[in-house]
Amino acid sequence: MTAARLLAEVAAYGSVAVAYSGGADSALVLAAAVRALGADRVLAVTAVSESLPAAELAPASALAAELGVRHLTPRTHELASAGYRANGRDRCYFCKSTVLTAITAIAAAQGLATVATGTNADDAADPFRPGIRAGAERGVRTPLRDAGLTKDAVRAISREWHLPTATKPATPCLASRVRYGLAITPYRLARVDRAETAVRALLAGAGLATTDLRVRDLDTAVRVEVDAPLAAVVAALPALRQTLAESGFTDVPVEVAPFRSGNLNLAPPPG
Image (cartoon, rainbow, N blue to C red; front, side, top):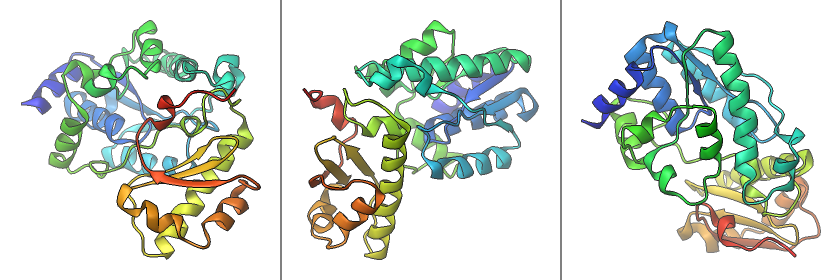
């Protein structure tokens, strides 16, 4: 049974600090750690920075509280890294290096033996995951990957354990919305966050429910990606352009396209 393999993997850690974003993967690792080790030997750590969508922290904290786990939210400074700001294809390496260095230090200060992330077996097979190297360099454990759990398996176990994250869409960091080669700045990240919140509210007001939503900063344009069946309907919304302009995307063309995870990995950088 896949859940049993995961629990056996985590039980071997003795104690653990989980790099916890509140997404389906890290939430399952946290829940498994509580089951395998007991809540008193588990710590949830959510790195808070400009790259974290504002709406993510409250539900992450609520689930940690429900699981009875201590939850720390240290401020991290990814933007202090020139490699992160440059936004090359290795951007995630610099981000994860900053975040995991901070979490590793917290784990050591708390007397916890291990740091674990929510990297799953699908992530390990993805060629666009430079952040995995940052974890490996720091001895960070990846129990989902080590137990052979794919994203589908993560969701299946999460449903079995009645976790509220079982059907939660992926919510990667805000920098993943910015086209490679465009400098990552606080303004760009905040603008994307505002735009996604505003567009989601616009769609809800129009009676349109989308599972996945991204606002991509392409510099010369802004692209809204939604579930494929909704793309044409969203493109026809009269208020879409104004909503994006009010969020900070002024004087650039607006595109609407079907959502595709990792879409910017397929596009060449500007210039």
